[in-house]
Length: 398
Image: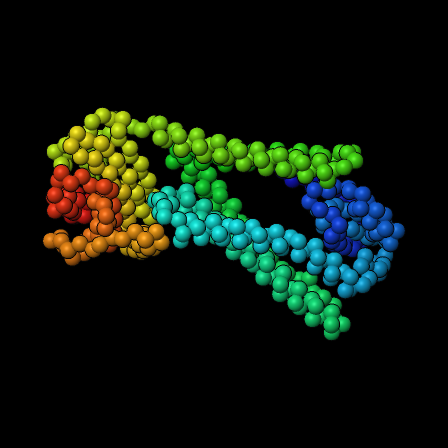
């Protein structure tokens, strides 16, 4: 029987018994066919078990000579303790990863002043993927804790410990498939939306990870005496290279944005410009504009030096009221944290437009249900009423 990649031959039917064993002594850096693994396989072979394959701590054996032969582990408690100890290390490393991702999510969503991620579809995508990663990891940790408690109770009662975790594995497999689909969708989106920077970053990580895997696999299969030490050195070196590469790409992108300001800006494309106040810019090099537009929201930072005044503001727009409330609350919490006081202003504007002024500076904050604008360090040459009325007319008035 032949398929697209494999060819199968008919053989005499055989009854084969398989056994999955966990070796806690083997680490990720030991590679294949370590000394301790080879010694253990000789012991298993003498007991009638032939080695099939391995993956880190997991060793698979089979036997066709006698289906009633003794299991590799005859002591149930010893077997449980061995699997528990090996699994605990994996669970603890997963827990550290989960807590790190949760902390990053917490800082991004709740503690950081910057809310531009709401206007960046790629960042929203990544946050969603990271959330799935957290759920995936939490399921694994909870499943391990439940299994550990049940296993110890079973040993005390003299019962056989159950190692059936298929339900949790199925759920985690579904989450894995969802994550893969989302990552593929993200790559396609980045390719079609012209996000070359993110694609470069992703390609760098994938290439470095793939090359690391190839080199470590080559070392594991070689006849080197100290494979573990060599693998650790390679792993650390590649981690440093990836870290440096990511930072180089990030900073190069930041500086390229700073140095590649579009000097030929169409003023009519922005809600408030110097021309609205009968002024014009001193030179095009003094213009700094940064825009982000996504599914949830859009942001705009606009800063221009004029002949009479300097105009600088941050604008946040969204069709979803909850995003505006989130941004306002985050802004107010940030102000309280640094003891920055804003005073609410009474104006002749419609009641749905709220206006706040910084206590010691001419910085104004205006917001409605779907827009927020913060005008920074307004020049007193023009009156406050003129500024607020013009801002309402250009930004909030439908």
